[in-house]
Length: 255
Ligand code: CAA
Image (cartoon, rainbow, N blue to C red; front, side, top):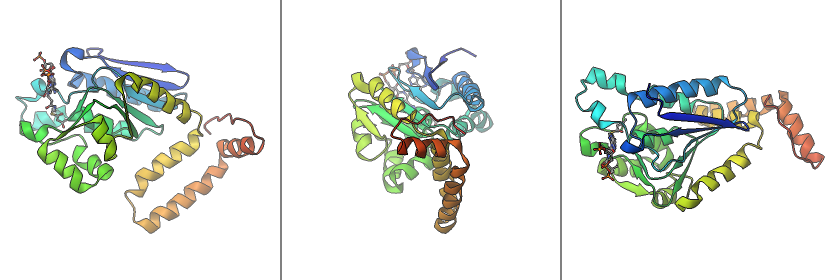
C-alpha cells in the first residue's frame, strides 16, 4: 500500500483524508484498499461516533484512469470499488463527505456513499464517465437517482454535466454549499451537533432509512414502529428523556 490515506480520531470523531494531490486525489486500487481497511477499523471501534471524509484541496477526481485504461472486463471488475463503498454506506455511525475541488466519477460515488455531503460553492461534482467510454460503476447510477430523482440523475449522468457545489445544493445533490474558506468550519459545526445526539437513535434512524427503501410502505412503517419501541430498551432513551425533563445536557453511552 502507498499510505496515501490518513485517519485521525479525536473526541470520538474519525477524520479520513486522501493525500494524492499530484493526481487530484484520483482513486487507485491501493487508496481504496486503504479506505477498506479503515472502514473495517471504524466498524469495530465502538468509540468512534462520527466519520468525516475529505477536507483536502480536491475530494477525488475519480477512479485512476491510468490504472484502468488497459483493463479487461475481468480486471475492471476486480479494480472496482463497490464493495468498499457499500461498507462505508453500511457503517452504523453518521458519515459526512466534505467536498472541495473535484468530486468526479468514483470520487463522487465515495461522497454518495456517505450520509451527508457538504461542499464548497466552487466544488466541481459529477459523472464524466460517458465521456470516456464507460458509465458510473461504484453505486452512481443507483444512489444518485434516489437522491435527486431519476430524470435529473439521467440528465447529469448521460450528459456528464459537472455541477458546482452551489448548483448541487439547489437540487439536493449536496446538503449544503459554503465558501471554500468556511468549509472545514461548517463541517466541524455539523460534527459538533451530531456528536451530541443519541448514538442509538442515530444508528436506528440510519438503518431504518436504508431498510425502508427495500420494503413496501406498510411493512416499512410497521418495522419503524417496532424499532422505535425497541429504543425504549436503551439507556440512551432513558438518559435523553430524563435529561430533557431535568433541563440538563444528556450524557449518552451509546447503548
Ligand atoms: N485518474 C488518473 N489521473 C488523474 C485523474 C484520474 N481520474 N484525474 C486527474 N488525474 C491526474 C492527471 O492525469 C494529471 O496528472 P499528470 O500531470 O501526471 O498527467 C493530474 O492529475 C492533474 O490533472 P490535470 O492536469 O488534468 O488537471 P486539470 O486541472 O487540467 O483538469 C480534471 C482537472 C478536469 C479533473 C482532469 O484531470 C480530468 O478530467 N480528470 C479525469 C476525471 C474523470 O474522468 N474522472 C472519472 C474517472 S472514471 C471513474 O471514476 C469510474 C467509476 O465510476 C469508478
